[in-house]
Length: 70
Image (cartoon, rainbow, N blue to C red; front, top):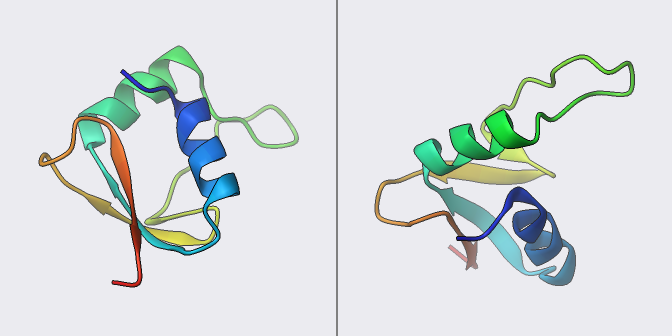
């Protein structure tokens, strides 16, 4: 299983990504294991965008999948 760090690196190396298809349960598990904190150390609220890319939650993927050009 891929980790949250893998998602960050996939986005970093894929400039053409226009959407992230993500499994919500996978994301919940990742946040539990590695909470995302802001500069003050408080939990960061995730929106439907991650690193400027729209997120679509789906059970069709095990963890995440980057989409290009959709």
